[in-house]
Image (cartoon, rainbow, N blue to C red; front, side, top):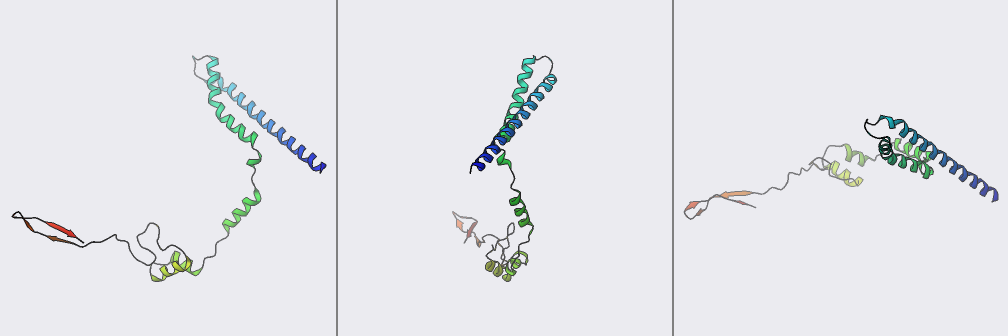
Length: 162
């Protein structure tokens, strides 16, 4: 038990040291970047203005990067075993039943519609008006008739739809 506590203390001390080193490297790079680009801003501005403009432009991105690298290095670790297992599962083809194959690849008709029902898949195809049974959605049709009754001595065209 005492040995495990000592190992954990050493590991946490090592992580703190690594975090501090990363922070110092980022801070040094940031300051060097500001100092080196301080001379490339437009003529006619004071050196204080140049410096403040550079600090304002670079502070937000550097702070975000430093906080990610220093505060949460363990969160950035990649679980390689889980990643490889997931990728391998993607590569293995899924075995399709005859009904699934028929529903997915057959021409619309009674057989395809029944296969889709048995496989538990949708009978409506995306982007088409034809379902698996071969029925076409043409909208609603109504029958209309035109008549010309006489109103006030004039014939008036009247359309009646049912």
